[in-house]
Length: 315
Image (tube, rainbow, N blue to C red; front, side, top):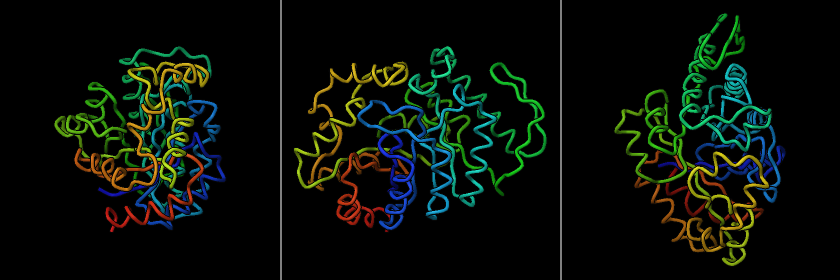
């Protein structure tokens, strides 16, 4: 398993994202994940820049591969526009780009007033969206008339030499089966049995995962930081997919305690605890793990955490 760095679009503005990408490259991380949101989950996180602008800037500042973790190509942005944006990103990055896609969350996708479909329809839309994206990446003038999307005489002129890989996320059996059928790889955030299901269903390509840590010399302070910024990570079931605003996530997160966050996020200076989390993903079959350092203590993460773990996995 190789270690990459996960840039949180919810915690960092576009200029900081470029700086963090540069620090990650200097520290020897394998590649980058960058989240694609219109809103942060809660206001305390404080940011949500347009990911395609950030990717363009990162492409000129580093030589790292970038994967969106993940883009929803179904409601807020038409899949033809995503095909255009991703092709440009792949050209800017000279082929070092992968498009991670998923069925999305109401938090980001409801903003134009569209109806938020049930899960089965969202997966159906995602499958057709991927079909549209790949069609346009073939080059030439293309048209598509499907159940959810229409494209008429559209041509993407700036295409990379090779189409980007499309990694599909999935957090339930139906989504994982879809990912195995249409994906060039699989994206997840948990070292659970769905990884094995993806392979058992014939899923090919890399398995990528994202995780969070809050490294720092003061464990109590790290716990407070993780709880302040990411209580929403502990919300159960489909809440993450159906709650529509950061205010709703803040209300639901009132049920989450600091201990609940610290039970799942390694907090503080104990490197053995951090290693246990990393090893769980390796044991589950993850090929590339992208680590997000929660909070402002990024320098200590790059100066102390990274030299401990990056050579072990990426050496």
